[in-house]
Image 1 (spheres, rainbow, N blue to C red):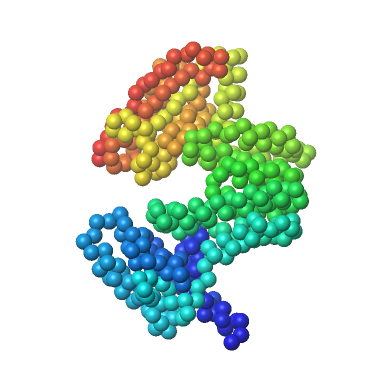
Image 2: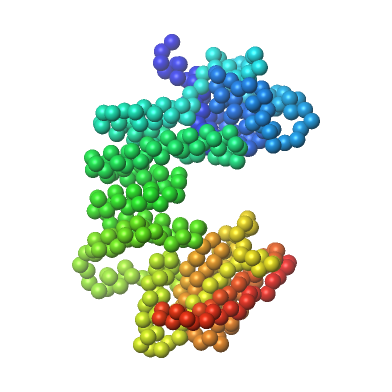
Amino acid sequence: MNRKSVDKTILQVNMLGGFSLVYGKKPLPNNYSGTSKMMQLFQILLYAGREGIPRAELIERLYGREELEDAGATLRVNIYRLRKYIQKLNCFENTDCIWFQEGLYRWNYCAVPLERDTDRFRLTAEEALQETDPDKKAELLKEACRMYRGEFLPELAGEEWVAIESCKYQKLYVDCINEASALLRERQEYEELLELSAQACGIYFFEEYYLMQIDCLMALGRYKEAMEIYDTAAAFYFEELGLEPSEEMLERFRQMREKIHYNASVITDIKQGLQESEEKNGAYFCSYPGFVDCYHIVCRMAERSGQPAFLMLCTLVDGEGMPLTEDARLDRYMDKLKSAIRSALRRGDSFTRYGNNQFLVLLVGIRQENCEITQSRVSNCFLSYGFRGKISIRYEVYPAAEENETAGELLFGQSPDWQQ
């Protein structure tokens, strides 16, 4: 039998970054949720492979958190359903793919051999980390990093056994990309490292991988692209996690700012390039670093003109006045609050997202007694979207003056609760 015909009989099992099966060259359909007990059973058996898994351990993985009168009987039912499901795939010529021998459940490897992406990745990563020849090591490290497509069985991340296995593969991946980074930097192979770091950012939102991308782009002289990565990272960490850019990230920002130069052009072209590309009505929404610049400019202008300005923090809170953090609809609420702020405020005002449940607003040319009117406009606009459930907006207002460190806090409470 030639190599090509052998390959067609192999069942390719992919578990990194998601679960999928390919038999020969044909992807197999998956008509069940990855979290169903039958599909979990399928995944466990495929991962156990020819070595198999003891019956007691299989029951523990499937039903350990459940109180069942007869877990063994429930397992037999799911084994029966899985056999029927495999038969419907019409790929394995009615072969009984599930064997039970000497207390072990195992996949019928003789009839349907498996090839798992986890095995390929682990073997390549281990070989790469042990290799001493720099050229071979670099190639193996790149190959291993490209093989890693994400967390092990992410749909089952809450299962203890999955979490343990996932940590093993994650550590191997982190070790490989760290060694690849050191080796490729030394060899000045920045294009290759840029590809790996971009892939890493798509899997894990670690700052070190964003920094890796920025360093590669700066080494290649692509400073504008590096600035775009900085903006993406800063926005993610601030809007999703409420974290300001680290000192390392800010240092990269300063380096990029010094290096970015624009081609000589006429003033009309420059002006065209400065035009807003997004929604122009209402208040101006910007990233947190951009908001900081707006704040500094307004404070400097206020020193000369005496024009008043205030910072307003808008926080979504529940019926008990506690910040809203766990609600599944929080993202939707925040999108609508963003629209309400943009619509209710003037074009001369600016705002930014501050954490996962807050917006920070800079009100220019407004007096203290008018701040409550502004809050009322925002609340009424937000209420007009007609959400169900009890929720409100808490407002805190401070004078926007950098030198006024002793200015008292103006707390106007929160918008009226509503129930619909």
